[in-house]
Image (cartoon, helix red, strand yellow):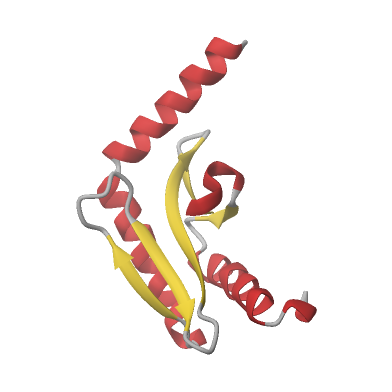
Length: 116
């Protein structure tokens, strides 16, 4: 059983690495959805193995989240909080508006912890 899980993780990892253009397209869609909410973002699409989108708010204590687009089982893509990897699921890549709402809620909570 353990070998099957390792094989699946390895396959997901390589499909994510080889689908770089798809990941960039999904992260661009997320940045478009986040724009009207007033969040700032920086795109890290350079030579890194997996493209990343840093979403943040300026203020006395800068608050932010780094988002990646990863392949999930079933051949679909999903947004994840990069720091938490696959455990940081934020939403499916086909619904950038919903994922932008989740990212916005996380950032608001980090800025104002009593709002959760």
